[in-house]
Image 1 (tube, helix red, strand yellow):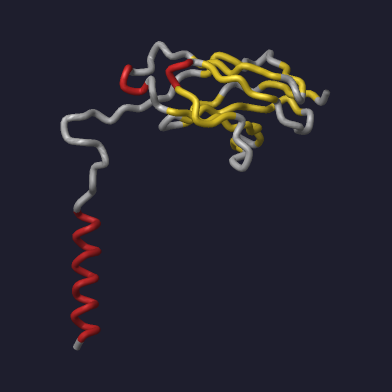
Image 2 (cartoon, rainbow, N blue to C red):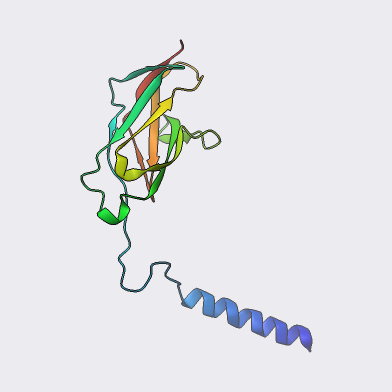
Amino acid sequence: MFSRIAGALLASLLATGRASPISLVPPGHADVVISPDITSPTLLTVWTVGSTQTITWDVSKVPQTGANATGLVLLGYSEDKSENLDIQSPLATQFLIGDGQVDITVPNVTTRNDYIVVLFGDSGNASPTFTITSA
């Protein structure tokens, strides 16, 4: 008897949960998407392992409500139409998107010419491919 009641209750909760999406945006507020274009590095950029570099992005389209959002930058490479991102070792974290730039130290990685950086605010935006060379 108990298992029938528990089963019916669980089925009812699952059916209700699927039918009723929950909004995480407070009432009266619009959902803000922050995805600024990366302006550096560019296709012609070459970084050297161990050097300090500045990643920059266009803040002109960042809404005022998103200027104080914090960001994350990951290094990756583009291969076979896939972004292979190093999520274990972010290049930068906890900086303000509204600053439009962040300084990083180029990690000790293999030389290749298809690196990308991806800037995450609430969505991700990848740079053009660029080159990193060993020191």
